[in-house]
Amino acid sequence: MRVRSAVLDAIAAHASRESPRECCGLLVGTEHEVIDAVPTANVAAEPLRRYQVSPSDHFAQMKRCRELASPEATAVGVIGVYHSHPRSVPTPSPTDLEEAFEDFLYLIAGPVDGSAQLDIRAYQLRAGKFENVELIVAGRT
Ligand SMILES: [Zn+2]
Image (cartoon, rainbow, N blue to C red; front, side):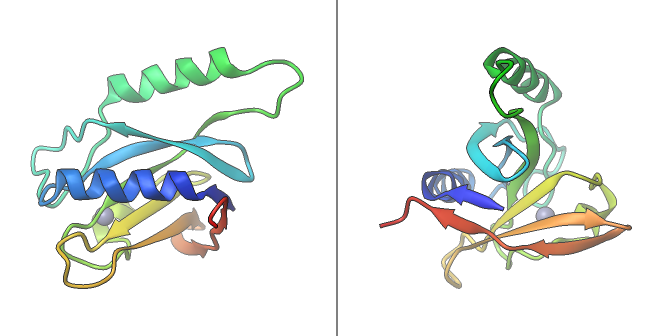
């Protein structure tokens, strides 16, 4: 999966801004590339250790993608979601697994508290398990 370096920078900045709460947002792109990371509200009842993308933000992004689409362009859509682990490594939690959908891309950023270098990793759910997805960063000089 290709990802633009600006997308990773935006996710890292959002994670820092929201810390100690988890941040979350939507990933917009194609089957092969993450083009944009759109910050959304975390509406989880316990944002210190959970995340839930605001449904109205999700709907607004799906609508925006439909408007972006043109007949000759590769299909652009909401392809996944990102969130942060403010105090731990970017490994999916049991809750992350429980709430995941097949075919969606999951980017996790962490830790944000300075205990280690922030890392961003990607996962996809296949047959009920998270598999690592290799990120190929484009546009980093
Ligand atoms: Zn998580």
